[in-house]
Length: 220
View 1 (cartoon, helix red, strand yellow):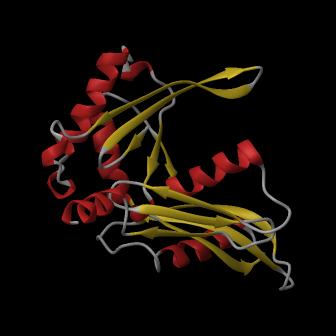
View 2 (cartoon, one colour):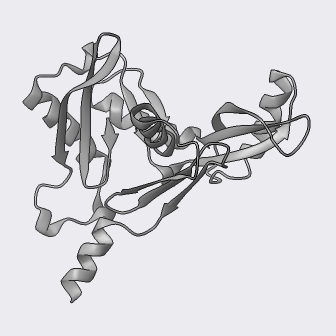
């Protein structure tokens, strides 16, 4: 499930010969009248109501859905590739936890993080490259509250930039030469992902997207 600003998207996956396939795709606007749409006025009730409407129309029973994967937008998380000494897992976790706190918003709650070791650093001996994803408990709680109030249980959260990169990798692989660029233009923000073999993973959230384009066109 993708809880967007303008729309909520829900994708139902299945398996054919142990390969994941898309069975159905559902989407619904978070606002009843698109002519009065204002992203700054969106409330939790808008998302919960939209998700419930999708489930009702598609006859999905939330409590029977296991597991539910929910994306967390790039503006709510930090995704960075970092280089650190190759060390034991416990020491690595403590080092990355300290690093994560530098990049997440200070909202008074603890850091929530995950990481993936990409491999040895090609330029520095005894060092490894690690992809670090971090957010706060408060942000996870906010998204979790929307999902639980919609009837679903125990969601698994995935970082949107990582999900985009994984989709590209699964469908097309990673080019041996050069880099791939993903630009996901949303309603209020756009997610840029730049990645290639033996290249630093880079992502940035851009504060310009569909709603900005529409407002500029209306002015002209």
